[in-house]
Image 1 (cartoon, rainbow, N blue to C red):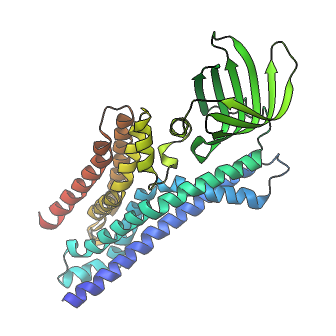
Image 2: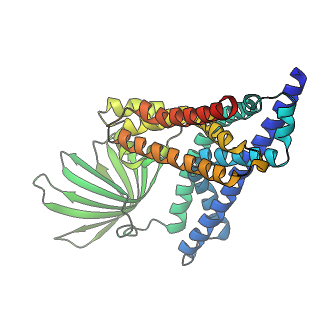
Image 3: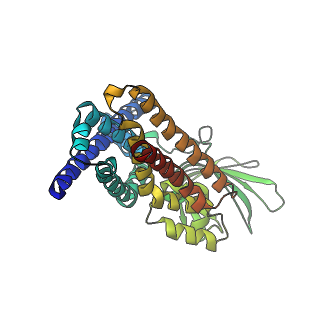
Length: 365
């Protein structure tokens, strides 16, 4: 019996991995095609945009988008696996051989745990790195000429105040978590809040105590525009403060999050977003286990009993409600109304208990 269980365990684990990876690969290809079509539309008027560079940009952008869909890939993969086993009566044979539902679910649970660990420790750093490389390719594709980002840039703003006065910085694109900016427009004011000048630059790099601007064009009220190759703008901002303004927690690698949390706290900046992201990644393997339990609770019904469509619909609905719960807890945590640990682990606990109790009722109730 032990050999039989081990053989069936490897078989069920293999079938689950094939289904989950297949769903993941299918969604990956679909997202790459959709993103590539959108990038082709956006770059159709650019002379320097080659098809290979556009495809590479889309390929580097998608992994981070797909990372958020990993739990649903596991949910759909597990449901597909168990429905296929049930349709071919393999589950009937396993039950007839004395194998309980808990025994042929265990291999999928162990596989989901391994997938979650790989997703957290390997896939997340890779997707963050590829996202940074895609930003560099986007900067090359769309260019960073002075003034090119004034009307288009809406997402990257930072305000700095020092002894020279105030400077409001607007950047079209951000790289290296804000340490390098492209497509800049800067509005400078003196200590009396009077307008001094507007500066447009192709790029800026944060160095110790200053922003180093390149390809600069300066506009003032009482003199004609001036063009400079470089210009140093004094700043009191630290790398931690810049990262907090220009980077989102989702773009930071799992292995870098502890240092980001520490630097944000030492600088007196809010670190709730980074803490939430860190605990979400730590909880990700257990979230995938919860998805397997939910999938098993709605996919083990035999086809001859009917009602399979309703069970599948209920499984998809459960996954959607779990996603809504995770978004609500995430927003509460970012608003500092819920502790990041509670926000990250509450969906895991709810999903796991729901799937476990449903299976317990079906199999032993």
